[in-house]
Length: 325
Image (cartoon, rainbow, N blue to C red; front, side, top):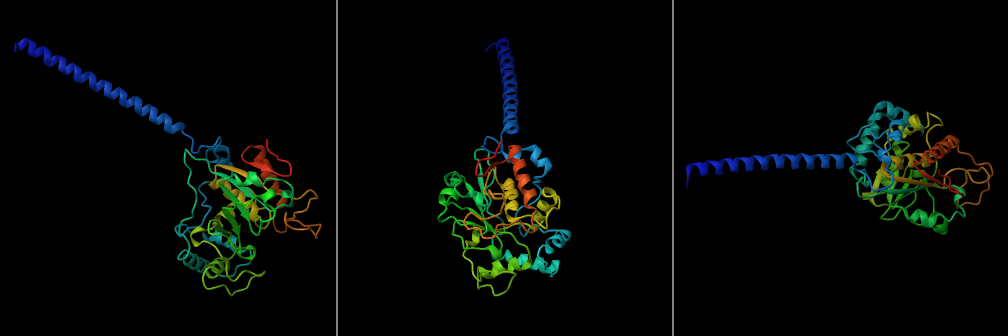
């Protein structure tokens, strides 16, 4: 082979290698740009609108740094405990609280069973209150379409399926309002005193023999793997930030709604507020007391916040006639 020809071949090979390098670098940066663009513009969920990307809601009140559920890895602060202990005149110390919570998590899951957000999934939630305005609403089929259906306390479904549906994935309760739940339903404990933790420990095992201000079940049927407990610090956060300290503490229904804002992508609200006569009645009861109010809770203010969230299109609020903008 001629020396000149060999030299030209080597030069061409060098140019080819150099060209391939530049092409590879260009492809790499182009792919990196598209990947970065996709990652930056990818929605956190598959819903039309995702609560977790609502910057106004996040900046205003829905503080995602607050842990809605209690875990053994999250310890509340003593000032949070001191607020919480006043709710039902708890007399025992912070140390007793911590010991009781540690014992609680020896029986029940250390981490709550929460559906995690995914870009290809829409977590739809129905929060179903117990208001008498659900009567003759015919919202049952609509409620049952949601992936998560959160119900309150003793709110029954049998006989009222047309209006309230029959699906329940989460039932929020405290000992004095507790009912048995099936193996597919999450028992969500709203604790108001140390005894509430002790009650669920014993009612799920050997039986509870203590007393409260109202009769409580000595035994409860619930799937231990689906037990979740709301963080007392979260309860304080709802009272401080959302209600501005109004009322002694938030109602179970209002806390359940704010909880849904933290664990759902879309939230629809049913059965909140007074009935057509202005009474805070339950849909399954024949009202005898014609002057039922909201007790220690700031019911009117809570209702106004829900209505405001609906006006801002953060939630859909269904009443006897749907109110949403």
